[in-house]
Length: 68
View 1: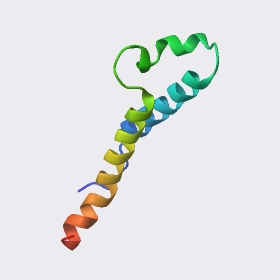
View 2: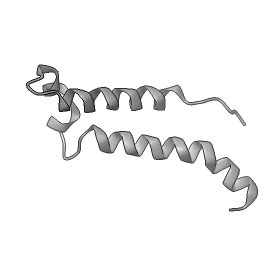
View 3: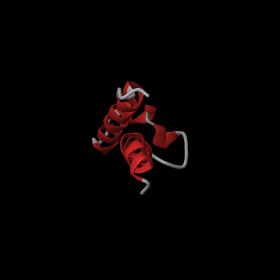
């Protein structure tokens, strides 16, 4: 069992934060390339999903071990 962080999750959470920032800057040309223009959700939903996934990876092992 490995105890290392999954750096892919951290990378995509950071990318989602950058997209959230770009979407909130008025008249930002980079906002045209964020995920809110290509689907039904925006980067905030991606960030929350990945934060929950990271929490499950971090605390799921403890919950499984303690039987909670």
